[in-house]
Image 1 (tube, one colour):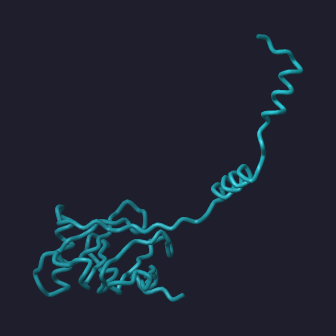
Image 2 (spheres, one colour):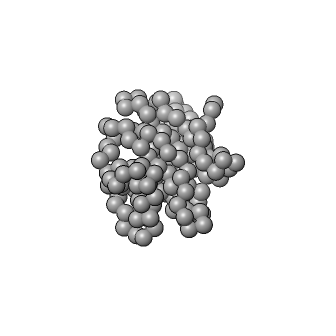
Image 3 (cartoon, rainbow, N blue to C red):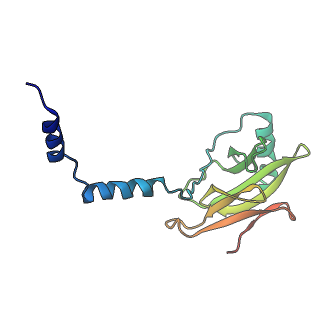
Length: 165
């Protein structure tokens, strides 16, 4: 069976696509999906035992601050993207369900220095920065993550301080 030219045109006109609301909704969805928006992410530090000499030096420093020899776990974080780790230290017995002291410690001139000492349920790293250093999100409410405190870097005091909005 051979098709003639006019028959093909008439078949196309009968079966032409119907541009209805379905196609309109699909087009709107594609446009909205491609609109850039600001994404927010929080990093959760991963705690573990001290392994290296530097990490053990940090643990000794925090033990002297606390005035006791208890077990500590620490998390390595790079707060200012300089490829040198800073450390978040907390007691080993600390869990998400208990408020406990957290210490943010870094090295300056090969000696550990304290950047922040705070009691909290948990600490997360924000994706926002102050003076090029990541902000910290401190959770002090056991059952409400919306009541968090933001801490930003203060270059004049060389410490983290609570940000006021």
